[in-house]
Amino acid sequence: MKIRFFDPAKGYASIKSEIDSAIQDVLARGDLILRKDVEIFEKNFAEYIGTKYCITCANGTDAIYLALKACGTKQGDEVVVPAYTFKSTIGAIVNAGATPILIDMDGKWNHTISSKTRIFMPVHIAGEVMETTAIKFWEGESFGLWRQIEDACQAVGAIKNPTSLAQCWSFYPAKSLGCYGDAGAITTNDEKVYEYVKEARNHFKGTNKEFGVNSRMDNLQAAILNVKFKHLPEYIARREAIANMYYDGLRGVELPNKQEGRVYQDFIVRTPKRDALYDFLKEQGIETLKNEYPFPPEYPKPPLTAKYEAETLRLPCNETLTNEEVQYVIEKINNFFS
Image (tube, rainbow, N blue to C red; front, side, top):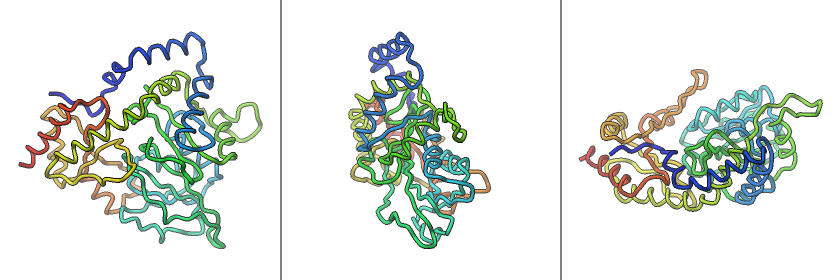
């Protein structure tokens, strides 16, 4: 048996008639950039998240960058951020001119605060919501104004009615809500953030303001997302069902935390034998992903994060998998440890 980590062709086949119809409709209308399909998605996604506004953009990385720029991030500012995150999170911070202050997996972030600290950026990896209740928005005499921007690119469905300044989303194909290319969005209740990003994603076109970027979601991707958005509850439920099969059946590996409200963008297991397990599963026809996010040397991973990433593996966990395929993965992992 051959099991891909993610099989977009299989997912497309399951809703082919809906997708084909939506694409043909966009092409027949000639609405390609920032037209009706984008507006429909922005309205529906804002309602789903529970915010006043949604502004789409080209990808999740741009969403983080634009959110940082929208709240005035400048050269020398510091952004406190978990070290356990994808490279794009840190890249967006650096490209916005700020310095990422990496916190390790023990959650100790207090000592990182300085007079340059401006943003706290929780990252919700694999659909597990990072606890942020200890973080307060406050205006300190020494430290200035703190704001919270969430990297929720792996957490569609897990964050509802947020109170942070902005939330950043990715619709990369393998996501729970994924299109057939790259796309992203920012949700917010802040009108200034909304107005800034709406203009900045399109070069501040027609104004003499600062230079913006070309970061628009095209209408074809929006139309695809509008179709898949209708199926999102079943996608999330199916991933949870697969996760429960893993929880019930797997032996020999450390399993991810069960958390109320989490979504299973990925199912991550841990073992000191990670590399050997990866090679074994590959031999058995099972595609997995090593759970590592290497950064450039000027931003070294702190020790607990580095150790965790070196021992963790992402298993197939998406709505295209059959029960038979999931049981095959479970069987082979258990065989490895027997």
